[in-house]
Image: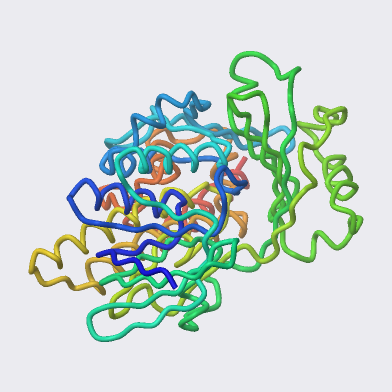
Length: 412
C-alpha cells in the first residue's frame, strides 16, 4: 500500500475544497486533495452570487476565473404570470461586488482545480475515500483509485469538502434532518444557437408556475443554457417516469418561456435529484471540519450554494492557520456560529419564498427603492452585514412586510 503524509487532507476538489487548498498553500502549508471524480465533471449549482467573489479573490483564484470568459451575471429576474421582479446587484445596499458569473460548473470547477494545481497543490483525481480513522493528533485515511490501488494518507487535519458525497457525514453518522422542507429538482442543458441577443439572452430568470414550483433559465457564454424545475417532491409524480418526456411535459406548463425551447435537443438526459436539502448534526470535531454542501445545503432558489461553500472553505482554512500558529480557536463560536448566522438568514428567505410572502414582496408593483436595495444585498450573498435590517431582522421582517403589502392592496 502506498503512503502519503500531508499536514492537511482535503476531501473534494469543488469550489470549497479549492478555496481551502489554495489559501492554505499560499500560506506555505502542505495540503493533499483527493477527488472521487475525473475533471471536468458535471455539477449543479451554476449561478453564483457576488459574495463568492470576495472568497475567490482572497484565495488567489479570482483572476483565473476572470480569464475563463464565463457569462457575467449582473442580477436576476423573477417572473410570475404578468408580474416581473428584477434585481440589479449594482443597486444593492452596502458595499461589495455588483456582479458575478453564471457558469457551467464542469468548466468552473475545472478552472479552479487547474489554477490550484498550477500553484503546486497536489490533487489525486479518480480517488475515493474508503475509510477514515481519527487517533490522537492525526487521522489515517484509506483511499482507492479506479485501478484498485490503495493509499494510506496520514494527516493532522481533514477538511471535508466532498459536497453531496458527504464523506465524513456518512462515515461519522452526522446526517440530520434538513432545515428546509423536502423539494426535488430536474434539470438539463440545451444548445441555444437562436438565443436572443442583448439582455434577454444574458439574464438568469426564474419563472414561477405555482407558489412552490419554479423554473430556472441560465444562459452560458459557451452558447449552452441550463434549464431546470424545482418543486415539492410529490409535484413530479404527475409526469412521465421517462425524464426526457417529463421535462417536456413540465416545459409545456411554462408561460413566459412557453415554446421557447421546444425545438432544442437536450445535451444530456435530464437528471432528477430528490429531496435536495441537506443538514448535519455537527460541523467540526477533533481533527476535522465540514465545509460547503458536505455540511448543509438549503435550496437552489437563491443560488447560495457556491457562496456558502467558498465562505466556509475560506474560514476553515483561516482557523486552521490560526490554530497552527498556537492561537486558541473556538470552533463553535468562530466557525459554527458564524456560518450558521449566514445560513439562518438565507433559510428565512428560502422559507418565505415557499410560503409566498417573499414572492409578494418581489412582485409588488411599486416597491420601496430602499427596501429593494436591502433585499438585493441579501440576494447578493451579503448575509453577515447586520447594518442591513433585512439581515438583522430576517426572522420576522419579510412576514411583516408581506402583511403590509396585503393591507395596501386590500385598501385599493
